[in-house]
Image (cartoon, rainbow, N blue to C red; front, side, top):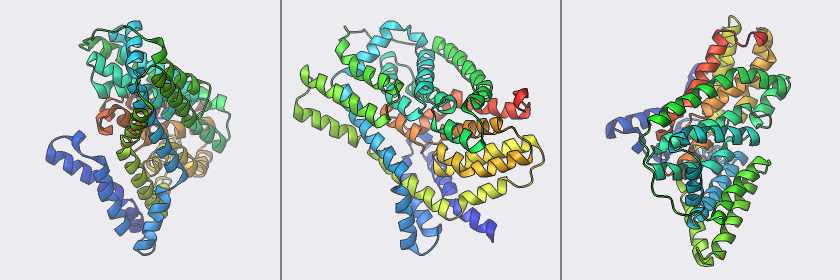
Length: 427
C-alpha cells in the first residue's frame, strides 16, 4: 500500500514526461512543445489525483507551494531581469557590449571565452542565477552578431554558471552541504576541485575545438560608445562584490535608464513602455515557476520525496553503493523540488547516516551532495537557471540542454570518482 501511495505521489512527474515526449513525437520537434501547457496538464492531474484531503484542500496545498518564498523571489528576479534587459537593449547597452567583446576577442574564441568568464563570475559571486542574468544577454547578442548557434552559445554560459554554483566558497549549496555534513568549506573545496576541475578543463578544450570549427560571420562593427557599456559593467561589478541579484539588477536598471534618458534613447513614457514589455516577456517563465512550485509542493506533501529517500537508502552494500545512493537521493529530490539547496537540506540527515554507516568521508559526502544536485539542477527545463537563460535568449529551455557539455562531463567525472575511489585521500 505504501509503495502504491509513493508511486501515485510521483505520478505527476511521469505525466509531465509522457505528455512532453508524446507531443514532441507527434510534431516531430521537442523544441516546439510549449512547456507551460505541459505543466498545466501535469498540475491539473496532480490536483485531481495527488495530495491529501478533498480537491479544495489540494488546491490550497498547490497555492501554498506556488506562493512560497523561493518561488516569489524567483519571480521577482525574472521580472527585474526582463525589465533591465529590455531597457539596456533599448538604450544600446547590449549591442555596444557585444561589439566591444568582438573587437577584443577573435571570433573563434568566443565560446571558450564566455565559458571561462562565466566560471570566474560564478565562482566569485557563488550564484548561477546571478551569472546567467549578467552574461546571457551578452551571449545572445554575440550569437546573433556572429551567426553562432544560439543554444550552443547560451549553454556555454549556463555550464560556467554551475561551475561556481558547485565550487564557490560562498555558494549556498556549499554552505549547506558543508554545514550539514560537518566539514570545512576549504576541505570540501579540495575534494570538489579534484572532481570539478578536470570536467572544466575538458569542457574548455571542447569549446576551443568547437569554436575553431564554427563558421563565423562577423558583421561590420560600428564605433563604440563607452557610456553604453556602463550598465553591464555595473551589473558584473555588482555581482563580483557580492550584491544580491535583485540589488544588482536594480542598480543596472537605474544606470541604463539614466543614460538612456540623458542621450535621448527614449522619453520617460517610452522608458516605462519598454520596462513593461520587458516584464511581460517573462510572463511564461513566471507562470511555469508558479505551476512548478505548486506541483512540487503537492508531490512533497503526498510523500513522494519521502518515498524516494526510503527506497534509495535501502539495500546498500559498500562505499560505492552508499555514495551512489547519496548522489541519486539528492538528484531525485532536486527533480522534485527544482531547488538544489532545498534538495541538499532535505536529504542531508539521511546522507550523513548513510555516510557514517559505510565510513564515507564527510568531505566526500558534501562534495557528492553539492555536485549531483548542481548537475540535476542544470538539466531541469523547469529549473530557475534554464528558464532564466531561455527567457533572456528567447529560446526554449529544451534547446539548451543538448549543448550543456560541462554538466554532462561533470556527471561522468563525479561517477568516475565514485567508481575509481578518487581522490584516494578522501576515499
